[in-house]
Image (cartoon, rainbow, N blue to C red; front, top):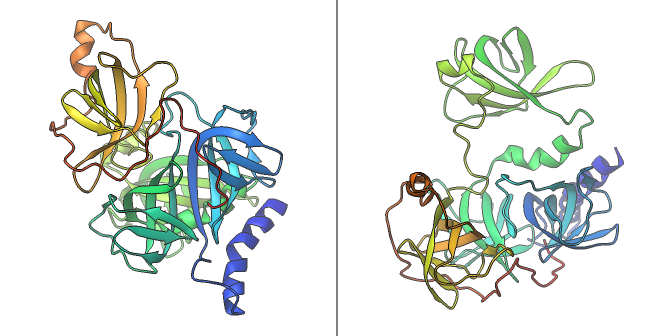
Length: 367
């Protein structure tokens, strides 16, 4: 309960301050998550790959040791440029989280062609890819996928989901574990629906935009059990009819955690400063998290996770070293994990050189 009250204060005090004339335009709170390496933790202040968080009230997963060098994912609330962690979890092999990559959801306080301000944090968006349904004006709720390397570099901007702003409170629930069920809607009214004989409160649920709730429609409901035994729906997604018989297959169409990122594996063909060429494609690695298990050199076999920026250039998010003695049968399928058109970078985004190794940036007191 104490944690919930503290987080509520973070979200509400800026609004109250504005009412009394002491707030600035940079007082609208936002929420987000960020993955990186623990650089220090003194019980109160946590520094992860260059970003500093107030963490004395954070819910720290039992699997997290908070030792220097540990890879973690931090969920946070941002307000007036400060970051307050409310959850710290470990990052396991196979997770989508990438070191120094994060996302934040909040209202634009200031925006122009080169930068955007959310919750007092300034993001370089000069090369960000903006979704077609997003209008970049003050007051618009957006989600920015970003990389941190001495500054915040936004590489994708999409429409924000208002339900994301409730995440800190959802994570503070005593009954935090969620469940899901897939089936046809059997009964429906303005605040509740019945699926597989279970009645769900949908008054505060996020409803997918890809369909319309109606009796007979197949949906997947993510929900929690409240203290009184009632079922509160958190998220309702529309499914194909075939999915009603296969509700356990949850990850067949999942999007990547940070938007439309791609992967490619192959041999490094050339290196020039912060640019490398793999499989004929040129990547900017200045902001990438580079695995410590090897050294970049021509002839090295690597896997690159990357995004395509608004100018068509390719920005590497993560570079990992792989064995180059792949079986011939596997080689064709591992060189590219998605169908792609070969292209080379025409205009490199503004970048700062980063030495090879996992990025450790300077401490900042903003979120």
